[in-house]
Image 1 (cartoon, rainbow, N blue to C red):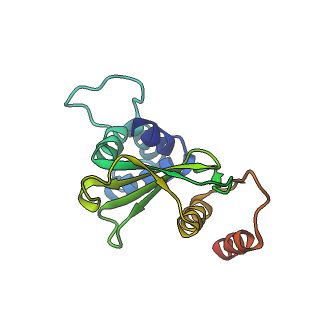
Image 2 (cartoon, rainbow, N blue to C red):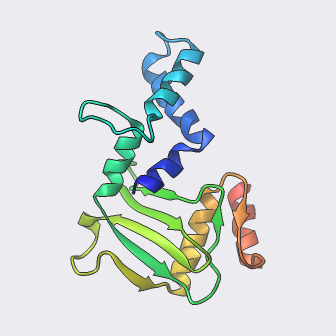
Length: 169
């Protein structure tokens, strides 16, 4: 969970989004540079032990991910793609609850996390065989979440290229 949280914090667009949230509350009080600095500072520290009183965006992400069951999805073929934004955090329609995390690990493995409340006891923390539909879903999410680069062990199919073109139009 901590690794995925750190992956989110390393992207410049994450800081941009955090800056936008801070701007909503403090735009009339703080200058632009101060807002940017506050966004960066609130994401840190990453490698320091924090006391119970310390606040950090990293801790908030870690708390979200700590209450999730995980599954390792396995593909028989080298068909799972990844990107320059390897973790996808998917929220419900109201953007209130994190409902799924998808994190491709290799061309055959993907980490899938879901809240305990959305998984059945006995079906948590296990390996699952991915169907063709599961792989298509994972690849579509990866394409949608990427910023610039997509990585695939194999040439992309015409269908995958169509997804990219549709998503970027």
